[in-house]
Image (cartoon, rainbow, N blue to C red; front, side, top):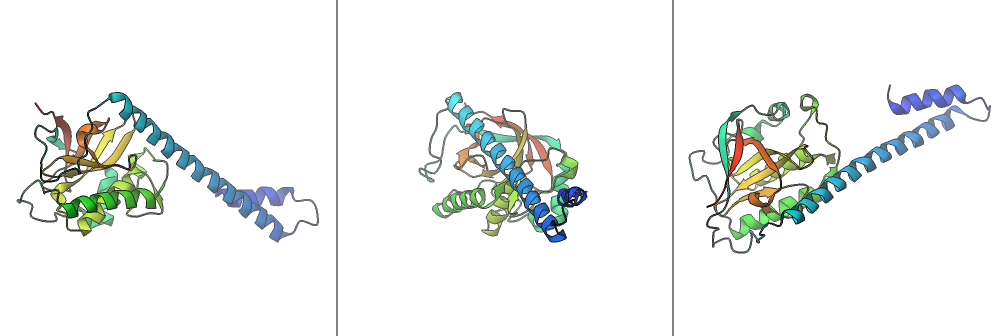
Length: 248
């Protein structure tokens, strides 16, 4: 039974005073139901903020050498870490349902046999920053359901979890004309042990990460996550186990 209907029945059962009308019972139920929804939303927001704070603390503790990946798009970054695609892997069940619902987002966009790394031009830098900031601020955070069989990945919902942020960012960048082989959904494991979805953007200068837990666009070498699997660059419908090729 839905919470609001259950509250109506409870209030109606105990409403012995003649002065309590049916309308007042309903108003009371709606008020209590709204309070419960607000409380749940606050819990989701607190969970999201707590997870983000933990990620920021971990980043501070690992003491990595940090640089601005947008400092000079023409300079390149010699000796950078790159994502390596290992053996094929099963795609998440929720991703398969996502492709049925949004087939255009799972098709090959751009030349599949063209350059695998796009140049990080001034226009592309601006698009990455704007999309990352816009999506992070527009979607209200909601707690993630870890049951993959019941997850739904949605584009631009009013509230959502990491999967919704990641697919929405990819969708918007595809609309800007980015090729599909440069925009890869990737599953990682955060230090707390939870599975997390983010967007990896492959450019000539670096492999970059758009993450709802971080306002900045960072190099993949700067994220304190364990890589699990990602979309294959040659075909976004297929996934591979991924690892990191460390620079010498």
